[in-house]
Image (cartoon, rainbow, N blue to C red; front, side, top):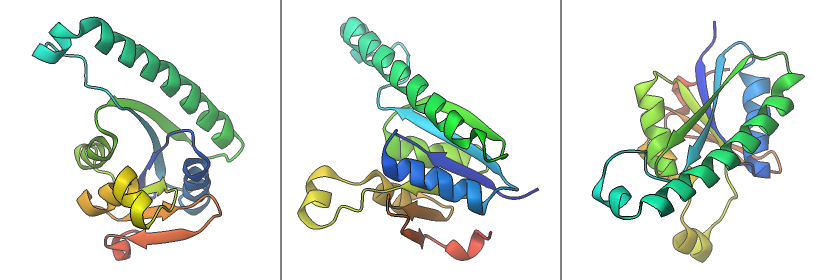
Length: 159
């Protein structure tokens, strides 16, 4: 059996390119597709008690989006012959992706990036950049055009 690979997705073209890359390169591995709903996990926090309706609505919208994106990823991967696992999580995307990888013994992360640079990266941030910096496992980023960049100890992640 191959490596355990995490592919965070958000419905974007770069995320689909990352899934394609993972399916091709790690066909003998365990591929987990993760959609992170950018919302707090349901709990009994003060914020959620005070803003209960808003938090519930945010979660509902996130869960609907997750369902659509994961279903599309499932259909996209269906013809590949590779078995994938679909997971939804709550939290801030970069933190949750890194935490999921650590909590589940993931060997590597393959994710899409929009390839922002300069001012747009500074203003908008980059989930892929934050994951690359925070992850203890190798991170491979894939742009829509199929450009692949392996970062963060790629020597540990082999095809």
